[in-house]
Image (cartoon, rainbow, N blue to C red; front, side, top):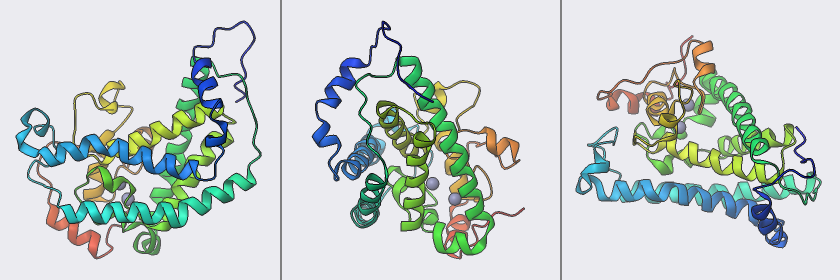
Length: 283
Ligand SMILES: [Zn+2]
Ligand SMILES: [Zn+2]
């Protein structure tokens, strides 16, 4: 998908691209991808962490919390932050250095048009969603893969924003690779790629945030195309359903879709199954 624009077309995104291009030294720094990912994740989590901290004293927001009685302990926040820092510094940083070395840098002076950017981001999300769905299904179908590589992410049967990145090294690296591969395979413009990365981080945090807010992305997209936090929360509780990260069509097609319903899930059963490695999907 080549995104070069025909001359004469008004490019609304050109000033943004010119501004970013003027910071080329920063963008091509070996530290940029890891700092981008780390900072974007924390910024996406910040509003939800604030809601968690305020709890019932902010009733307007608290009524949208999916498990109103679940409060996040400071030690859980610290453990998640340590894990995220550990993964980023020891694994994501060297992996991005390797990717940079393998990828040839192309310098584009022209920004994509708005329709090109929107199409590119949508296609990236659809491709990433499919790749993640297959990866996720496999890691629940094969007991060894679940126990050794995916069960750490399921330690949080009740999700909160930081649990989006709470995962083992293999999981984090493979999902980062799928995220990087999607715009590469579709030969997207760097601005489209950056927008996709930001949206990907946002949707992933939203999936785990623990709130079903009226302005959440899955409520803004029609026809139930996106599952959102209730859909992914159900995956953390039941294990054998809702494997796709964002869209619902693959789960519907593979008959693994389960519609979230309001109600108190059995956390004790979920926690026990997660601890014992019984999060493997039944066929
Ligand atoms: Zn899972
Ligand atoms: Zn999750």
